[in-house]
Length: 563
Image (cartoon, rainbow, N blue to C red):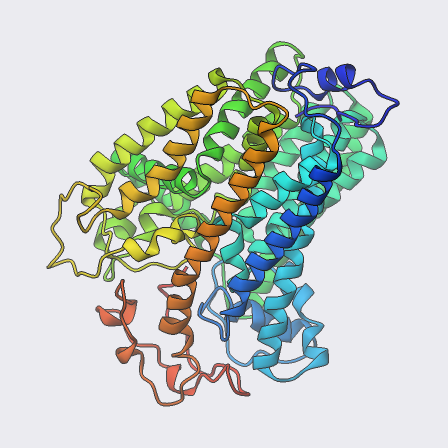
């Protein structure tokens, strides 16, 4: 990333390519000026993303998250002027998304209608994210139609599309992150006081979306401090906005949690894990989460990581500056520490009263930042990244898959409970998950294509295949780039459609319980993975009176096990 590679005639393409920074930009590498084909392709890619998000959203009939959906909806009705139906039990749900949802309650008083409107609004926010993401991608040397295809590809991936099936803050968090990154690029291109203020405001809004976004705010503040080496006026203006307003956003979000009866305890969990966890558990969590990101992005996140390392090196070595690539690297490091630190403990991985597969692969925290890496990787391969870049990504992927399949998978509870929104990237392979229990599962089973542990190996094949093909063919030419883009969109669409099996199953498993006035959680259907209620976890006391598909709010307590 770097200065904008303008596509207009006023800036020669060769000079624009050199200014773009990052890869070894050459005129032969830059895609030709987009003709009607790319423009039609851009429109088709946006339409495809809309269809995929709509298909996922169509299956969402009632809330299936006791915390993640219901608490935010409770906040929204409170912020619209209503009262809290029951004290929430949350874990850091900040008010930004609830503020957006609040006007829905001025239109309808029916929880069922409000939920469907909230789901629809989430789809709109997801599609709106394509614009800032595409504008950021143009800084990599692509014209707007080509960048739009890349942004639509990112939004069409299961890791982003699956979130449209839930009323969670993930959609707004990623929109705010994309806008923050675009503002950072614009600030780096021309460090002025107004652009610094816009970047700082975007970082503050990002903080209000979720408590975990505070690590992204910290990265932004540190980056502004380093920006003083280039423009002290712009840096001080940004710091004057980001530091106090960001602190206020985080403090007020936590205060709202406490006032409404919730709370935020994840910071204590992360710090406790970092202090007490064994290194082997840290490695297991890191490997599992890295594998989930790689499998869920067709390996493009690995290409993006290689490109990011190159960009950071060039900023530090050649430009002697801390540019946008350094900011993205800092964000990635911060959220990786948060995510690994949250799940790398024996309680989550081994000793929980009900076993969770998603605890071994948790991708939800990393997904927003790694989506930027996916965009970086997709732009690189479309621009013709050479064998050196893709080959390194392939080598990293082979090593990661080998460690995962041979070391991590044999000990993991592949049969364990799965929440699609926690590991959305690998949900196209949900159908391969076995049905078993801790007593019946053959521990130590190395995955193969035919045994009960095949999930790990089958989900690893698409990224390996794509990177191997790209390494074999080398740079894509002018004719190859559109073919590659179309192929990626087709494969991505197939994966997201396959993920509906997981989202529909989860809706049936959890959402139907909240719709039935007579059904007990002890009788939840089991098809593929056992639910918490089928183990030693207590039944949901409010299940018999929770009627989101009718007219009333939940009146019972929410089980504290859900994240």
